[in-house]
Image 1 (spheres, rainbow, N blue to C red):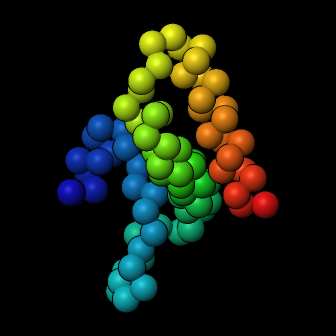
Image 2 (cartoon, helix red, strand yellow; image 1 turned 180 degrees about the horizontal axis):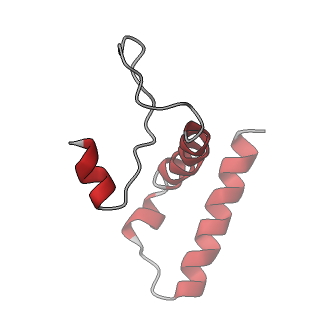
Length: 80
């Protein structure tokens, strides 16, 4: 999209440039947010491997939240 259109909507592009780009469009500071965002998106991808969370079989919110905590604990234990 055109850069002016992004700014018109109040958005800021924080995706990294390609290696072979001739004129870089960013100075690197906002890319720190991009690295932090990757961690959160990765966590959601791991959580969606638990079918019970994706389909949301649980009727009560407390049970669903408990399963989210359990899945997060399993993910943590796998990556230690």
